[in-house]
Length: 440
Image 1 (cartoon, rainbow, N blue to C red):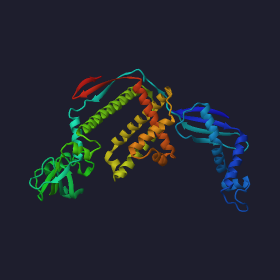
Image 2 (cartoon, rainbow, N blue to C red; image 1 turned 120 degrees about the vertical axis):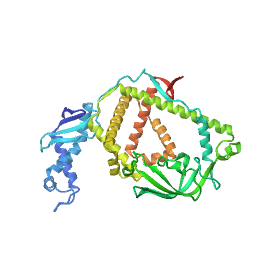
Image 3 (spheres, rainbow, N blue to C red; image 1 turned 180 degrees about the horizontal axis):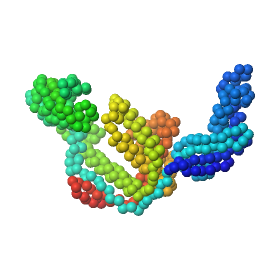
Image 4 (cartoon, rainbow, N blue to C red; image 1 turned 90 degrees about the vertical axis):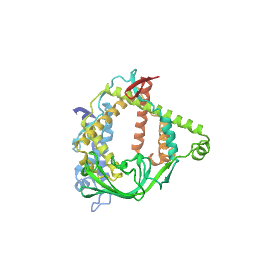
């Protein structure tokens, strides 16, 4: 077999090959016999029609294409192996010449992995910023635990205040028209943690049960509904209930009833451990991201537009599926976002591809291997996150090649990031209100 490689552009390579006539004829005969199994020809039982009859029935081109499908896995695979090509797409036939009794000439185009020129990725000295721990982090966490076990008690003898939860009916009007989705009955709102339009919750303070009143608000300029952006609106309110949060008393007895701990001291120790572990995780993630960014900044790689286009299409599919779950119309969403959304997708796609290429290059440079034990560990982590047994997760997805490929890639990503952390010097710098403090 003779092959000729030609670079078309960027990472697109053309492969021309010549397949010996004897093997081409054998494949052609096999293809004709295979097609004969699936067609009905008058005067012949299925699979018994001679080649000439099959040719007249389906055409020579159809048989040649079937013959190429028989020949090409072997010959194309050999051409890729012989020329040490790192292909990233399925080969596409651009031209072929197939004549009975003659050598077959076939030309393909295939995309290869772009060249990556790694910069420094070992022996770096990297400063990693870490947000300074809040002085009241422990108190907030403890208060969060108490809040989970608190109660909301009805208030009958006073107006609503900023820390209450209120239940009310409301109807919204904008420019004389009812607001779509702007009315509800018996809606409960925590006034201290409202995600309503700015100014809405504040105007529910100071009102009594059964009181009816109007409030005035202005929709934000970036509101998701373009018709309401920056528009004034009036909401008619009827206060139905006022509830105040009553926190439990922190005692050993309460802790024993509401947690797996026996004493207040045990609970506090667990909370502090959680805060410490969370901080260590933040430090690790920040370190991984900062070191990897240093590697990316010193690496040269050209990402072809074809790869970006495919990744953009994949990102769009992800967005569309997510928005569909939320009941958001995809076409309306695209119109509301404009060109900025397309640009951000292209930038994200290019970044993803570049990062993936660099990780792949480093993994080959340092000879990272994926072992069976790595799969077991990763499966256990994922199963824990989903709250199922690893065997159940494997049963559901184990036969899906995409799942196993994705799992393998995640393992490689993790190992590369661990390698970068282990082979570079990290200096953690606490950042608080514009000040830096080097952390040992």
